Length: 302
Image (cartoon, rainbow, N blue to C red):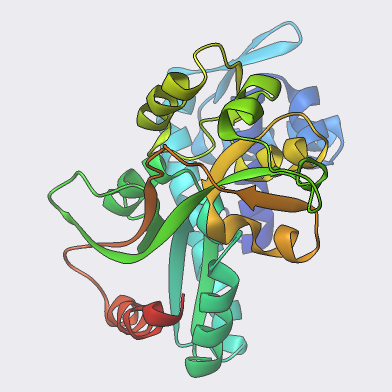
């Protein structure tokens, strides 16, 4: 970059260029970056003067990348990524960390056992910086293969050959209802009655719903359903009396203790078991081995 200008200024010019390329509009880029529109124009002009090419083709208020701009965009993103990674590594070193571990975790696991794992591991290994990325189970394998994460905690089994997976624990599925539907002094409603009088909130877990629904329809052929793909939303819907569902027992521990949700028997239905898998690439770093070994020792208490 041009001699005499600071590295920070150059990085900001690159960030501005990347935003302008994404928005194809300098005003939209300025709003996204919280800077003025003239500043966007200045940053882009500085880059164009240094490179000796036009990075954009101007078309009224909008802009489009030139051929040179499209080629340079890859370089700009790489430079910014390397810079940000180096800064983050240095900040981690200042905090006393000697290694970093990025975990990809499904929302179900993040809301249940993950806090316990993180708390215990951080005490045992304060030199390891943990970074948590919440993602759906089906995304975790690809994130491992693409080196986005180092370890995955998923609710679905591994499919790819280069991914190693071990089962951590089994989580029994329970029928979850509003506490108002559990009459301690009166007779309990049958499963058929519950299914006939409540919507069944479905597909909040990636693994078991198709087979379970087939069983439930044999009990209550005319039951109605509503797809709600997130467990935490499903729980709120149940609390508000909008339906019932079948969830891993670990996901409603707090709500049961606080009297906000209840679980009831489901006779005649073979309730599945949800598994949790710890996934890694087949070639791993020492920090990954350290984490896997720790969690393997801890899994009996999960």
